[in-house]
Structure formats: structure tokens, C-alpha cells
Image 1 (cartoon, rainbow, N blue to C red):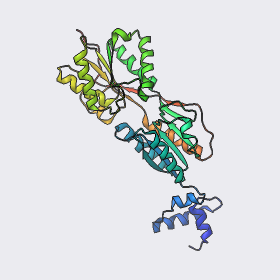
Image 2 (cartoon, rainbow, N blue to C red; image 1 turned 90 degrees about the vertical axis):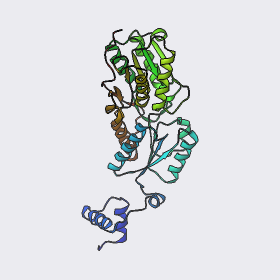
Image 3 (cartoon, rainbow, N blue to C red; image 1 turned 120 degrees about the vertical axis):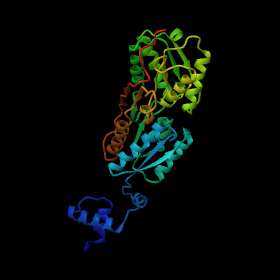
Image 4 (cartoon, one colour; image 1 turned 180 degrees about the vertical axis):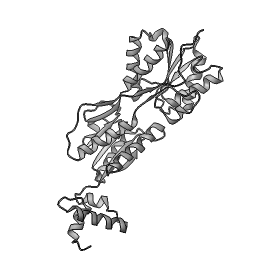
Length: 328
């Protein structure tokens, strides 16, 4: 190539002061030779690794799997590689994951659905850190879905269709995400003159974390067994719970939405293909993940921390599972 080892090293390690033509020559040669710099070795020498760490609680939930793919793709588009650790909601595993990331010299960390507090993470993470949908109130850079607003969308939609008797399936006020939605449900129900004591049936299994189709069936079965007067509309924790409930209602001879309406949450792919197609809340997860990626890279590249929490407003996708209140 006719270049010194020093010049080639400067190009590989991303240092400035090298002519654009020289950079292009070195990168072309690297591509032809299949050479990939050792990011960890660069980190040990104090150079940039181009690696970020991401913690997810789990990927069994389809919406989290989708978020993982979107976030990884967003970082790749910006020239970073993402390393993912799964914690299963275990705080000790999450703190250990942060230690591992730090040992690997990552340039920044995203904690998605974290159960940690500021006090847990700050002594460990000595790099830029972005929280996405944290379970607790934190003071650092934070981006979340506006789950309270989603309850407004769902209730106003159902109330506008004439529904006045509701069931809420699977939303546990003690569950971190239920804790965001339940106070909002109470607030907007009150504004719409929906009275909790006489108009709302609340069913959930305290502490349960597998929010699956089977969970929806179980909640619907309990509703059918215990309700002397069935509600006309159901607000479900997520799309899987909603679809499980619809299948159980069908077995009991109820038609959706002719006899009972139901709304889900997450806008999974299946929600537009299931019959009836499912009214659901779209989290705008692509926007959420892009914001998280951009926020972390901005911090890595010298930007200031944004301490004001940022909210992504969801969208209600109305489909065939909700309709006018049935005439009885």
C-alpha cells in the first residue's frame, strides 16, 4: 500500500488527521483481506470499541423480541455493535450484566424495562446510560411509552361506542407496567363517569408474569364463571391475553364484537390477522428504539444528558374486535 504502520493504525482506530483518500485505501484493503479490528483489544488500549451493552428482562414476549431487533438494527445503522444480556427480571443478574459490560469496555448502556434504581446502577455504570421504560422512577436519561395516555385512548374509544360496563383482564396494579396503567384507568374512568364499584370487574393473578394466551383464557373463564351480569367491553393487558380471552368467549357462545368488545395492547403482527382483527394499542416501538439509540450515541459523542423524561405517545389501532354496545 505504500503507507506506514502508524498511518494504517490511525485509520483503523478512527483517529483524525488522515487524508480521506488514505482512509478509503486502507478500508478497501481491510475489506479485501477480510480484516476485522479487535474491538476489545482497542478498548483495553483506551480506544473506542464501537460496542454498546443492552439489557432486556426477557425475549419470550413478542413485543420485547421486536424491540431487541429494532434497537440492534438502529445501532448497526449508526456504526455500533450491540451486545445483549437477558436478566429474567432478576436485579442481581442485571447488576452483573452491567459489570460485564464495563469489563468489556462498552461505550454506553441501554437498560430496557430495568428493575434497578439510580442507586443500584450509578456505582456500576461509568459510561453513558439510557433508561427505556424503567420500572422505577429514575433521574437519568429516560425514554418511555406513555402508558397512561394509552388508557385514555382505549377508554374514550369504548365509551364512545356506548359501553358503560367493563372488565379489566390481567392488569395487576402491583406489576411495574400495570402500575403505570392502573392509576390512569381510574382517572379516565372517573372523568367518563364510569364507577369502579358497579361498572368495572377487575381480574388478575397477583404476581403472575407469564402474560400469555393461556392467561387470557383463564381470566375470561373466571369472568364467565363469576359475573352475574357480563360486561359489554373488555380491556386486556396485552394482545395475547385479549386473543386468549376471545377464544374462551367463543367457546361460551359469545360473539366478538356483537356480544362483547375487547381491546388489546402491543399491536403484535397476529392482531391484524386473527379473526376478528384486534383493536389494540401500538407502542410506536420503532420510534422508541430509535430515540434510545440516538440518545445514547449523542451522549457517547459528547452531548449533554437530558434529565427530563421523554414520552412516546402510543396510537390506538381500531379494528373489528370492538363495536357498538350490544342491544339487550
